[in-house]
Length: 251
Image 1 (cartoon, helix red, strand yellow):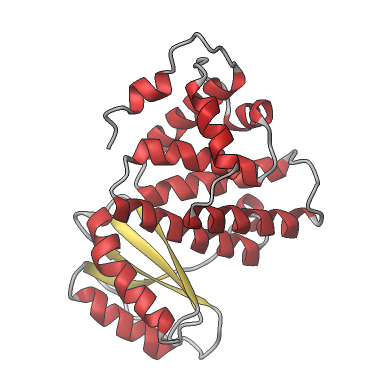
Image 2: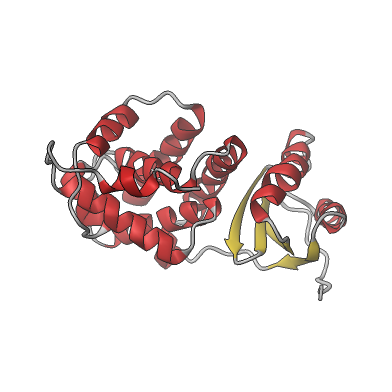
């Protein structure tokens, strides 16, 4: 059931809408992205991101006035169910300062949509994004393993991917890592500060939200982080790599 909210002021602040769809992956790629990117190109909103909650998609909108929000709701209602306005807010204790956190939300959304549209295996792509995020945070393998949490050791195959990501020119990943670096500088006040303490918790939460945008469940996120941590903690060139074995048929 939808609810009616008071008109939003004509500001450049954030608002949000939510809707329900049976196949969120296809809905995001085939409907949400074209609608939202089209409005951004037309100047009706400045930026957007999404988050999943089971079969519900919550979309954050920056710079959309009341008329733009209502127009978007009407268009979404043609292809989705239970379209309504939603609350928008950033838990700064968990996610750091609002402005850089929201920038990370948006760039993470771009990366997730690109991955979904390409049809890449989700767990394989998620492993790459975990390591790309660690690179952007200037963490080495042991620091990344500690950040993610423990897991069984794996072989050298992940090392190849780690080294390759340090040199990647993939446009979507580069935009994501640049957003992470900007947010890190904003949160820490200096580009070279070592990631420690509560700051690490902020980036664990941001990473979980990125993987949520791909459609991974909380249990899948925890398991994948643990396996990646184990793979990075021990570098044994003769060990079989369970990440590759597990992800060979991943979807």
